[in-house]
Length: 69
Image (cartoon, rainbow, N blue to C red; front, side, top):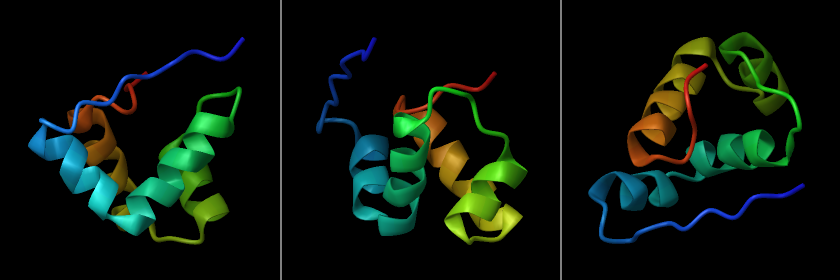
């Protein structure tokens, strides 16, 4: 079952995440998956480095668009 997410554009972190194309591409992979992703798997599937993927994930967590498990 899909859940809805309400995104507040009043949040600077949300705006920062939305403006970063690579972060949004990684968020889309996370959003569409039924399983949680680890950093290494997400990096591999997005064709990015571990460091870039980790930075994207940190931004997504800070923006409330992803959760840390």
